[in-house]
Amino acid sequence: MKQLFRFNITALALGLAFLYVPIVVLVIYSFNASRLVTVWGGWSLRWYVELFNDAAMLSAAAMSLRVAAFSATAATILGTLAAVALTRGESFRGRTLFSGMLYAPLVMPEVITGLSLLLLFVAVNAERGFWTVTIAHTTLTMCFVAVVVQSRLGSLDRSLEEAAMDLGCDPLRAFLKVTLPLILPSVMAGWMLAFTLSMDDLVIASFTTGPGSTTLPIRIYSEVRLGVKPEINAICTLIIGSITLVIIAASLASKLSSRQGESAVPL
Image 1 (cartoon, one colour):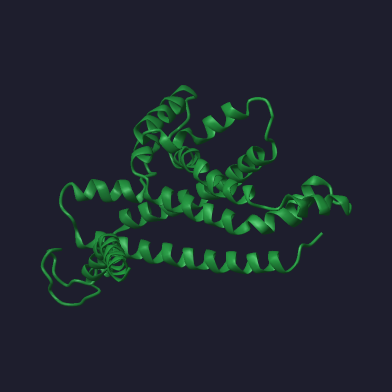
Image 2 (spheres, helix red, strand yellow):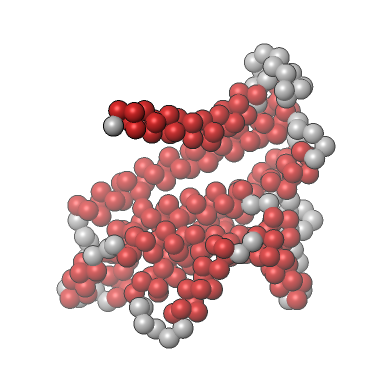
């Protein structure tokens, strides 16, 4: 047992190192004074200053943040409603087809999803830009939100919602006052997952973007092909910090809402 415990600790340490050491190296080298990203030249904020003078990179970052915020919010609303439909409507006609269509993006290659959305936007003569990328990312991330929320709804005690309706609540009010506070942590987890997936996406965005709506992954990819610039390390560090703050804030909010939901069920 002692040897097994040591093996588990070693495997865990190696796995965490494999995941996080490259990120730590990137953050450290974002403060490198040297122009060469592989040569350490001392600590400096030089490349952050250069980054804030790079209008194209900042514009791409702002575009990615806007797309991620809009698409994550839309995906959370639609995914939550879809999860409720699948959980509460166990036997409605077309349930199997609906669930299959909802979960298709989970296993569909992104290049196929991106190409199909491109053909759709061309067919309806939609101008590609911010909204087409947002719609594409909503389509991609909605299924992930539905999976997260459905797992929570499946383990939820439905008698609480039924008791609220017995005391005079209509189904909508019972859902808003009882069920939603109880599943809010999973809803927020789905939002964070959707936000991260949108920020990370390159393939689908490259199919659905247009002039003036370049996202950050596309901008970074176009510049990395010519060589990694130190400013890229700086912008990646800022994005990591921003996402970390979002996750911390959402986690604190979900814990607070979970405690409130467990302490009392408002009617």
